[in-house]
Length: 193
Image (cartoon, rainbow, N blue to C red; front, side):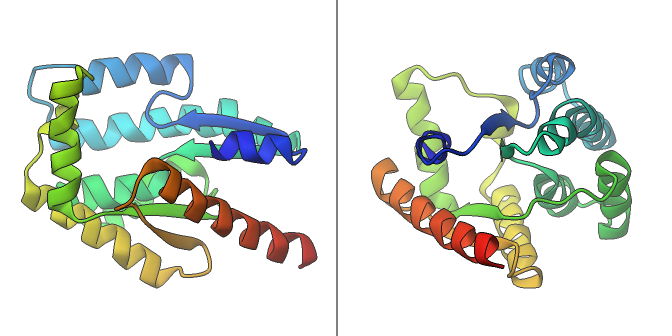
């Protein structure tokens, strides 16, 4: 929805996701998220880093060099939250791996869709009823997701100029209106700056 809005305003936009934004990333996503075998936490951390390195070098940097806007569903903050806080890796280790994978490339703006863990889990569980496939990350505990949410909120507190928290408790249309308002505000300050 955001990409469509931006395109209608004349912006050249590319959408992507992590993991899975490149052909290699799609194979890594399938191998990692759709496996039923236990994945060692260090393997998880390094697989996401490998996907991100490929993603940055072959998709994100070239798109930015061409003057395009890149909208990515997840990026390096996800590793800090999921593997750092969720899996318990030391912050310094995670930061070094993120830097290695990204070369220090950070988003100009990050939107965090904040929702209470219990409500998020209820939405995830409703996928069963709709027939939407779950992946192995959907099977994590409420404690895991509480740690992840707390990590995202801490990142937002540490980097308020880059991070915007979006209340994700409403409908898709309500959430999109909040996103559109945040993006408009960001573009106004960026274009005039």
